Length: 278
Image (cartoon, rainbow, N blue to C red; front, side):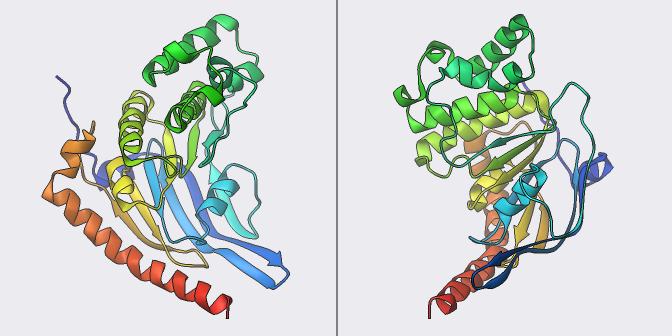
């Protein structure tokens, strides 16, 4: 029988900082003028934290992940990330849409990062085999993406990300296109895999339920320009049973509280959109 350990704000505070943002700002020049996506975001993310980001559309959530992935540069401010071990990649990213290579099999997609790093075949077989097993894809190792359902393709993306053994895992609404049943199953699978590794994870979602179910800590962002409105520590024990957790009154109370913070920002973002089309 598994035992649970209460994850507290104190235990997170005691962990070394993996990612430190100070006064991070990102602006884009557009035909209509300069648009500020992120404004003065300062944040410390502890090592091993499952960090959730919620906010209205257009608040800069994906821009923040792209900066951390090295795909964008900040306009001002600083980003400090503790360097990984020499033989480990800094980060891997799981996208909202289908990011698999259609000409590769499930096995080849899952092995992609390790193959690029020229890892020995025996190691690749062992690691990829482990994560295909953990995601229930062993029987589909030789299948191609077009032969899989949307949920199965996202499982391949998760297996590929973990198999590459990144220091930080960046996830941009990976389950948003799935039906509720598949979303629930993938949340459970992701939690089981994460329990093995305790990697630092940054996960974007529009779902407060998902944020509370998965996360150790949640950042609620404002409408554009995106700022950190509130940081919430999730006090529920791990490992978590998704259905059992959602049956607790304390779970509903926390979801309600966070939604109260987010609702005003969603309404403000909607008002901004309405003014922009007039």
